Image 1 (cartoon, rainbow, N blue to C red):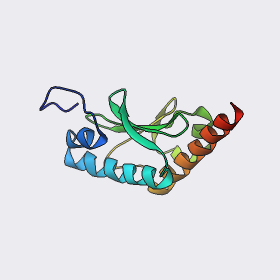
Image 2 (cartoon, rainbow, N blue to C red):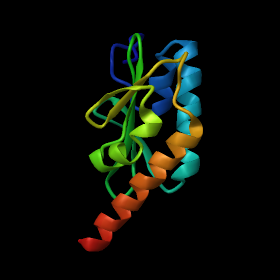
Image 3 (cartoon, rainbow, N blue to C red):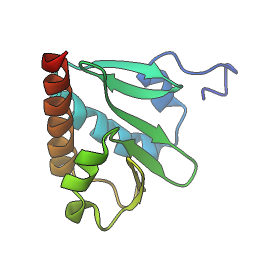
Image 4 (cartoon, one colour):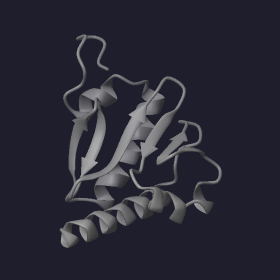
Length: 126
């Protein structure tokens, strides 16, 4: 939350301004990777966190005091990348990481592209 103004952030830029520089750098890299992998995704704040939507929710990003989270939204995708995620704390469809041990961009790109395929398939089936 943007504590200076006492209100939740309205944009991802505002969200990032409210976190420490170390975390901001890691989240900016994550943001660039997501946007490169999903250029058609809409970037917004939803549920007070950075959210990317493409044919529905794609992924979310969260900054906490001692860690960050990358919310994948899909158990199937989490299972697909289980071995590559073994060095991270996982909770449901959420990957927790720290600024000192961020997610590799290559892995984030693969996860985002897998989510795009899931969402496109679901959209075609409607």
